[in-house]
Image (cartoon, rainbow, N blue to C red; front, side, top):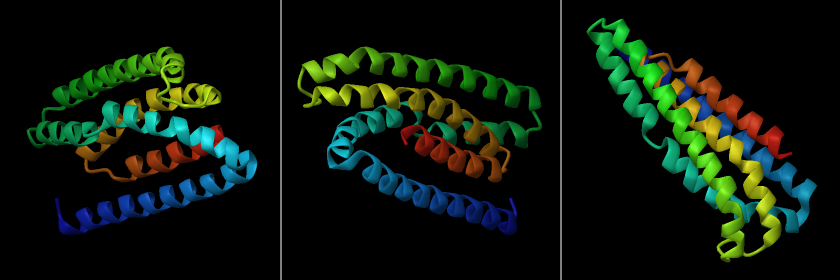
Length: 170
């Protein structure tokens, strides 16, 4: 990869990361104004559980997929590139679905066992569930495009994902 293409890709991902942070900050402001202190507190009880499941479901996957895809692309083995994408997408969809269902099923237990100390946070847990499923699927797409050394689609997907998360939360 030429240094110009590398720097361009790094710049695209950096700008996307900044935009995601700005959108996330706006999200916090909007949520605090809409929900007030008590509502934000309930949301913050559920958010660490969401982040934990998100980390379990998609951490490192885009990097692994991109390395495998780039290796097959270097060998011009396009059939295996497509197969890696199909298998990873299917696997990640299954992992995302299982974790989402587990969260729905475990939400009541988390509240009953006292892990989540306020029963009203149950609905926050349920509201965050679809994001786990979609984030795992997006991890496959990000890895695939990064393996092709195309950084714009992963950057756009990060921004769109954050925007949809904000709109859904609000």
